[in-house]
Image (cartoon, rainbow, N blue to C red):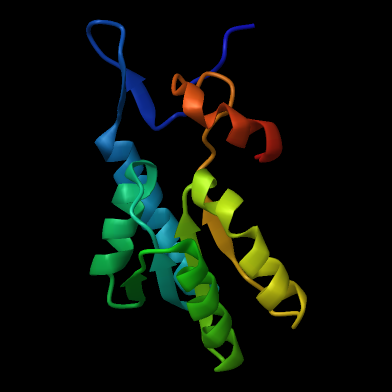
Length: 142
């Protein structure tokens, strides 16, 4: 069985898969609307090419305060503190980053029963041509 490509990708001349910007923009706007409907006000993110359009959309949207952080643990701490202050929040990060942040989640969120909403890119899934992401696909499930 041949692996399927995500719908936001389209085939172009030369057989390469490229991001369909119009679809990723639509998905980003829809996600922003859903996050706002869930009373999410704070977004903490790390740079990631796979969700760059979503990050840019949220950064431009006045309904959100977007904070770009340099470490995954900072995003976890920031959003956990926002919850304690009564503000809905979400973390956006790549799969590799999520694999490194488990300790912070168990010490902060698990120990103190603080909910954390995390949107993670799924790298290493079947069909991902970057071999260095394969280990992520072994442990993360869609």
